Image (cartoon, rainbow, N blue to C red; front, top):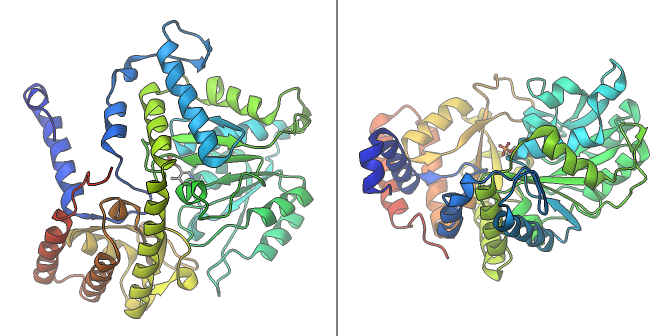
Length: 435
Ligand SMILES: *Cc1c(COP(=O)(O)O)cnc(C)c1O
């Protein structure tokens, strides 16, 4: 993987990179937030654009020599808008977290409550929400008065009537929709109705299922949200990074209760830079443009359809093995296994599967009695394996392996034999097999 030159100049890092490549090649990557980028995306991330400082926006930079990075950023913006039918996009956020931070702070100045924190709603972390949706250990939870909505304990789904009731009670100024570990569709239309009734902004974070939204396999948040945020590296299969979009055209809004001449999109632009970030990562922005072009091809829609088919089959197979899935199935690329009926913690399951060559992550499940470091569940997703070309037959084999490992998680001998089978299957699906 690495060059002879790097092996000589920095053998320790070359070795770590080569080993990471081998790990990705001979294990089964089932972490729902990961994917494998194309050689074109890799090439551009590793290009000379990394050398360039370009604070500001195309044609409005604080540095000279920005002609070519401007071309790249404009292409990224135009392609993002085409991909999501968005009127406006900012492609500079370094990550999904910074996209969220910029969105929140541009809508609701946390200091505008004059010592009193402003009420905001987001999905609880233990119910599939993201750290940036109001966890007390994240800036979002420290800056705002967070009222988390949760999943219905019977259905494992978001109960929109409960969301509406909570909004009437706490009168949030902002509602965050979206999650990291929720296997079902989002009803953005209803979220907007609830936000409107409360006088709140709606921020929809589609970090996980952005790829589905792009090809029309998930309800579209753009018509209903004031701001939509996403990552570019999960189902979207681009370089690590974030992005913000909007179709909201109201210039008349009161930002943080204060009349402002700025539109939402102007406010977000100036919150991303200079509010939250400094110089944009131009090599990453150029690679985002490459990934968006790929996602605009018909082959990407076929890919997303296969991701969902694989997830559906895997979920059905696992349920045949008596695995309990939160919400009893999935509409998207991921599923959450509640292992409490199996007598195995998420922590042990993650370890045992990893030893067997299947990489997943432990995850809290609704009503979890274990701590976040132990948990009762694991989250699994199909985006990376689908990129490698795996299909329904492989999903069935994987379900059988997962069942076998969870039945006997401490059996080293047995794990070793599964590891050998996993490696054999994985190596017949090359890491860069797709075009
Ligand atoms: C992954 C994720 C993020 C954060 O993305 P980073 O690039 O890791 O900062 C934000 N929101 C949701 C819902 C996510 O799943």
